Amino acid sequence: MAIEPPFFEKYKAILQSSANEKEKPSTVEGFEELELPLIDLSHLNLGPLERQECIEKMGQAAIEWGFFQIVNHAVPDELLNRLKQEQIKVFQQPFDKKSENNFLNLSVQSYRWGNPLATSLRNLSWSEALHISLKDISKMDEYNKLRSTIEEYAEKANFLAQRLAEYLAQNLGIKANYFQENCSPSSSSLRMNRYPPCPYPSMMFGIIPHTDTDFLTIVSQDQVGGLQLKRNGRWVSVKPNPKALVVNIGDFYQALSNGVYKSITHRVIANQETERYSAAYFYCPTYETVIESCSKPSLYKKFSFKEYREQIQKDVKATGDKVGLSRFLL
Ligand SMILES: O=C(O)CCC(=O)C(=O)O
Ligand SMILES: [Fe+2]
Image (tube, rainbow, N blue to C red; front, side, top):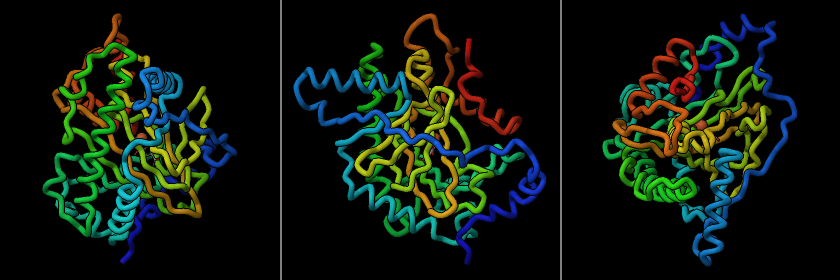
């Protein structure tokens, strides 16, 4: 039984009607490959001076890049490898199985593929994902060792995300227990991505350009590469580092920091030859949490996570795009 989602059948009409169009997403030109600012978290445990320097460097990266990479993050390589192996196994399931409503006893639409609302080449994506809200984890089927590995990883990722969020908050004078009060291990989610080789890498993306709907994201990626971010108006490629996790600021931290930290648009380009895997941990507050800028005058109206999500759902339906924070500008 075929494991691949029926991308071609789904996109055939758009591909054919767009064959002569000029609006191709231009994903194959030579992109500059950059190393993200590297934050060595072991410096937090050296003297007070090194610690302060490390926190400031993290803040500076969040301001200037919206992205950085971390080493000595205390998530064991062995666990990251195990997560990837379990991820490979689950995506090897037949497509018909993966797309069943109660796949692994998860909520409907936990398994996603391509872009169901795509209307043009700009929003075609060649990837599949298991997007697991961590409040669902206890009822998830074990499936080999997938659930227990996710549980183990989510605990470490939550601890790490909270620490990173708190260090970043120190630079802005946000109170120390803000994240403890508003986030819980079950308010976050884990998205496991698989990017199969794509026969049309010049026509579409692995994941379309987007910003993340969270405070911050921790990404574990393999060495294939393909993650790009928009920097000073240009797309640049993130050079994979086998020892590092990638961290990026999400929309909620941009709003909370009153625009000081940047939720940067990023995407993944499609690769004709090589399959790619990544796992993104989205550090999110509870639905009721109201997000308000930490300084005045505020750039953004205050909003709850619930309102933000509902607005995204409306916008995606109407325009194919999430729109995001600009909706909440004052
Ligand atoms: O695959 C990656 O490197 C990034 C994935 C991503 O941006 C996401 O899942 O939101
Ligand atoms: Fe993302």
